Length: 403
Image 1 (tube, rainbow, N blue to C red):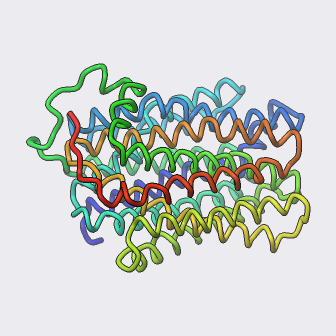
Image 2: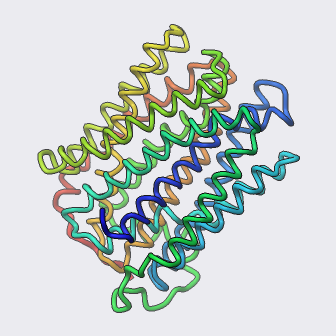
Image 3: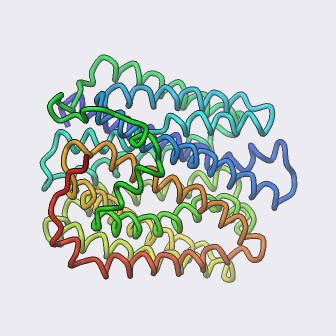
């Protein structure tokens, strides 16, 4: 942790999740300036989150391929600059289309998480990656903890204030990275050339899915993240309507989520991976998440804050155990020349789930406020079944290197 490049990577991960979470408590109120019906606000909140993710799906695999060719450093700095511009447009506002423009710009340049994971894969041994991904997750959890609090508290000054602060801090981080971040991918490990296939997200997924272990891990991950991002995309609306939470209360609740991420990814993962291994730990995380989804679903009938908090604890501990373990399994299944592309595809896969998850939640929410969470529980069970059925394949698969 005394290494400047690792400190920068951790700070970048922190700021990425801070920027993501800082808008969650204010987004319904930001949209509420232009739309006034509950269903319309829920729909546009979902669409704004999905617009970012759709653009990230289009761009992330290509950015990953470019990082395999030109290195991680330029792609990471470019992604940070895109986030700065996106926050500024959200802060300026003035119309719904401006909000969408900000999310689109941020999404098209949103390769920072996949590049961060590829960077860490470059500088760590395969046996250590799950642990370091857990530390990255803890840094992200800290950002997720601080972001809603900042958004909730500063949102009382103006809804634009936290967004401009996020833009300023990200800009400072980008400038800092320009001076302290060395390149991690040696020239002999780089992709020799980049063609249209490498930049085409559909061709990229088809290429990567030709490897059976990646196909299984990506499918299980997509299904889980679909459920998770459906919950995140609808959570602020659900809390506002069912529990009558205001912007500060939503922010404080998400503050608790960040604390849980720090505990699970920063502490539990590091302790449990040497004992259980990444595959068993990922499975355990999915089981915790299933129970968490189901518990949250009951609060649509029994509006009891204690039950809500219990569900959030179970879900976020489960997610904290699953994500770094699954990322470690994915990273260890391929060689150094493919880290950027596979991490970009992983980010793209999550982006697809961010697109369809919030829209699915907004659509089902109009029938009954608890329906999205019941269905998310069932979806998470499916993700667990796929992973459990893949134990033998994952354990016996060799490390692959694709062209």
